[in-house]
Structure formats: C-alpha cells, structure tokens
Length: 183
Image (cartoon, rainbow, N blue to C red; front, side, top):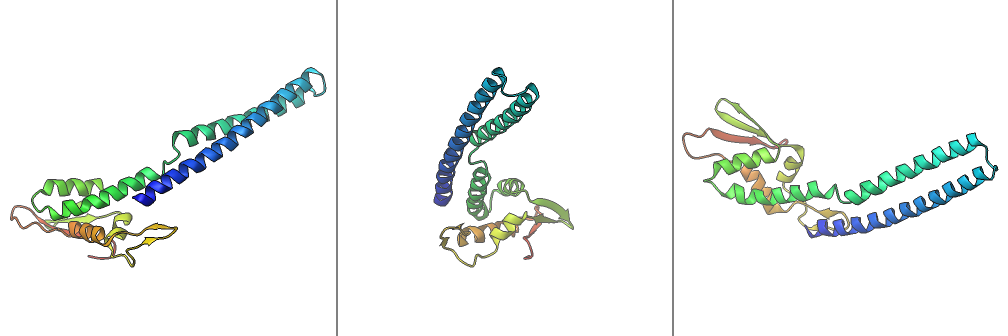
C-alpha cells in the first residue's frame, strides 16, 4: 500500500508538470491567434488563409483544453481500482477465517466478480484471472524494487482457503472453487 501511495504522489507531480506544459502551449496558441488577427486586420493575410489558420489554432486549443481538464479531474484514475483490489485481497483473510458467517462469504465472492454456479448440489466458483493469480503461491514475497509489490503469502493463502471453503453444516451444499488451473 505504501508503494501505491508513493505512486499516487509521483503521478500527481508528473501530471502537474504536464499540465503546466499544456498551459504554456495554450499561451503560445493565444499569442498566435492574436498575431493572426493583427495580420488579417493589416491585410497581410487573405481571408481564406486567416480562416484556415484560425480554425487549426482553435482546434489545437480545444484539444489541449480537453487534455488539461481530463488530467486535472482524474490524475490517478488507474490507481483507485488497484487500491480496491488490494483492500479486497486483504479482506479475504478475515472472511476466510470466519466459518460462521456464510452470507459474508457469498457477498465477498459476488464482490470479487466470481461466477457462482450450482451443479449436483455443488457450488462452483470461477474467479476472474486477477484473483486466480493472487491465489497461487508467489515465487517471492519481497518488495520488488522499482516494479512494485508481489502478493503476500498469507493473503494469497487465505484467499485460496476462502475459495475452497466447504461448510460443515448439513443444510448447505458443498462448496468447491476452481481457481485458474488449480482445483
């Protein structure tokens, strides 16, 4: 999570630099528009040339303004789904160890986007690819410098335990989860 927070701060600073560059470009375009208008009023540029260049400059100006708006509104748009994924993965440990609250387990599986199916009184749970990757044992449990954090062993183990949960109470059907290639 610290790496994610650092990435967020780094991304914001990069966005600020890019926005400043775009604003400089806007100032340059406004100066060109002013010079173009002066040239047209002094009869240096024909009306057709003036209209073509004006249209091109306004098009460029509008494109840059849209880019600035997009960057300012959501500089870290890609980080929020990743943060939600990490929080959900950490939540798997608590839910997997609670053998009483089956409703919470069902809601968790819905939240993760798993596809629950019932066949011969057995509930199958096909998990999306990102969860299948998390359930496999990681080859390394260290912070990979410069690239990010690999899944923590305990978290992956608990998620796998949740996916393979089998209730002990008779009225509930047996639960079997397939995660990726493993069963």
